[in-house]
Amino acid sequence: MIDNDKIPNITNENEDEYWKEFKNTQSTYIREALINKYSPLVKYAAGKISVNISSHKHIEFQDLLGFGSFGFMDTINKYNPNIGIKFETYALDKIRGIIYDELKKINYLSGFISDVAYVGDNSNDKINSEYLAEGENVKNKILDTLKKLPEKENKYLYYIIIMILH
Image 1 (spheres, rainbow, N blue to C red):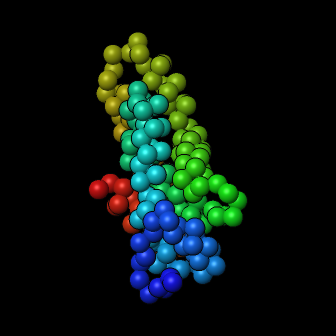
Image 2 (image 1 turned 90 degrees about the vertical axis):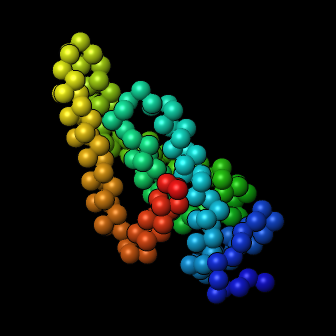
């Protein structure tokens, strides 16, 4: 029996039952339990992407976590437990896709081209200022997006980011 007045402990044995209940009721308690159980997927996906782009220092791991958190919330809302795919499989694919989409939006590839263009230039100050400007741009985009979210989703994303960073 599901207790709708507290955060449940979701296990592998009972997760199907909780997913179905969540889809029917949109229970905030079950949502929080799902976030607790699956939020490490964001760190995992961001870590894998971070390794692939590690030579480009202007993209910070925390930026990838922020992008991934948006994707994670979207996966919880859109996941259909009746399709026969495990949530982890569905979520990792969606989280990675959203991180890559966000990298495209901030024109990540042009940053890479800038890195290559400055290889022959001894002006480290110019490179460092570009990295700082890019990092500030990413941070501002994340903050602007957070401000546009409804209060409920904003609260959950903040909670996810805090959990991931600890």
